[in-house]
Image (cartoon, rainbow, N blue to C red):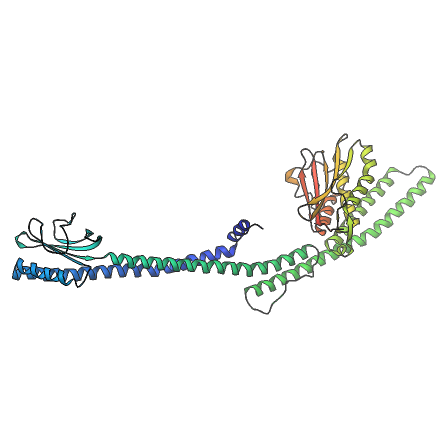
Length: 463
């Protein structure tokens, strides 16, 4: 399977969806924890910076008011020389905004005239800085600016978001790995269930899922499914036994009735001509016997008993024999019957008698409904990488698309053919059962015009 197809299949799996749900919940929990933490840190940091700067501004204002501008200028000059903290900036300016003392090169543009606390960008000598600034209007028209660099808080926030993104990525990676492991575990269990269901569908009603000693959810599911299989086996065996008993018990007296009718016809024939009612009664008995024989054959196929008789068979020989057998019937009805075999010999493990009967049913249906002058083509070929199929295609009236799913049901007949053509409604049911017994299926496809009945079968064996 291509990598892209595998990825798409994994993305559509329930394990992947469940993992995404848990990862989403984990990310939501992380966000619920991180956002209040980030908000609290930011508010506390900002408030602390404002409080410290405001206290320092009040101290400088007090120096100005108590000792005058000369003492404030000397104090700020000394502070700038010491350069104790590099993220603090000062500016003491005259009424014309010319710097008297400080380390801010020029009066910043964009500073409001009103005293207060602001956040803006200062153009310093080395680089622009994002600062939290307090402006104070002093008596005599003098101006005082105190600023604190807050750009490093942005770096802290950036590291915080990077760490949060890394944690989210790690959580997502762990979730995907967990999804892969969960999917692998679930698929192993599902494969066991599929194998058991396939075996039971193939007729092996004794097959069961392996039971482990673990008392987990899968163990409970396995035990529940096995109990269901036990119940299905009991029900099917009961129905099969009743059907077989009825068919066997009724076939014997019907055979005796037919024999008596034949003797009666012979006795009447010695005296004259046998009445048509006697011949019709014999035909009716034969019809009922054919129904019972078909039901018994279907019961045998459904039970899988014929699988033990599988041998290597050549589909080409079976198809060629069926075509030769039905060619006189086709010639009598002026129908062209041909055999198309481009693959040569196609071998597989199967039951030649059942395959011949199934193909005979398909040919009988085709010749029954194709009008005079029509054609029927039988083809044998390989399908896919290792499969095989037998196809009977005709140009008759076909089967409506709405009816194709139902014609394989037992005793079901299309309304257009009911009462107009002979049959008991079990032919396609037998073909479908034979195809399933051989690991395949019956497909009914529009042939434009007509019908193409394709019996897909199991794996081809090399000989």
